[in-house]
Image (cartoon, rainbow, N blue to C red; front, side, top):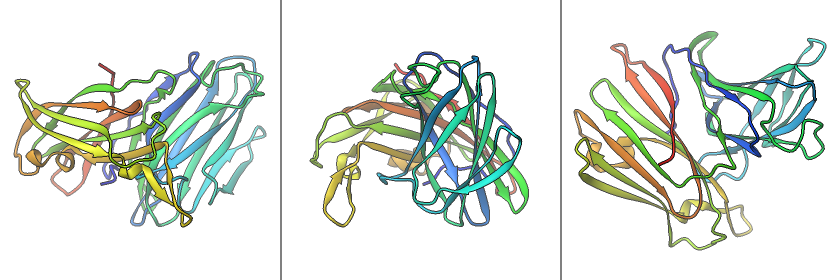
Length: 292
């Protein structure tokens, strides 16, 4: 299930850059029919040097490129508004003057798309060797019903060069709330087989007792473009906890933890708390996840 929001919330996460090679934002949403989603990327420079780079987008379930129709709305250095179609291109280029800022709004067609974004510096950028050095980056996605803004959800950035493979995440599920997970898995094994576990999820109750373990196999990393199967090195997915564990499907109330073990490479997870209202809507809060 795609994890998105359809209720009012205002929350923004700020990533202040240090010496990291790349930054991963584990969950973004673009497009949709009825409820339409935009992802807003705001970047500012903290130095007097120009920063140039690229934001790479990849889709859910092993899609090699960002699928579907999408556009970017931005304002240039003279204050001129431009809307540029990026359909068929899984990236957009970024240029920030010293001590300047830019805002990029990503929006799509009627089809809903989820995935992740990776920010990296161009090799010839005057700003130096690292992607996030001297940058502040804010990424949010917004939900609209027609012209009415009904939700804004902030997404924290994760340094791509600080890989981790073990995470323990507190979760809660009940009649009025649920917990969702979104994650990026980065395969570094070089394998092209489909018989190995890539991620193991372990569910424990509030007393630490193991209730269930679910394994995610490498099948989803193999993609066929019509000319034969190829290995997808990066995988994004998102689900509620009761979609991962059968134990939680009918649970009326549960508090515990999920342990994520990524066995073939690093993971970049994100937890999302869902609170439902009495009118069929819900609030969502994204929560950064720290490695064990």
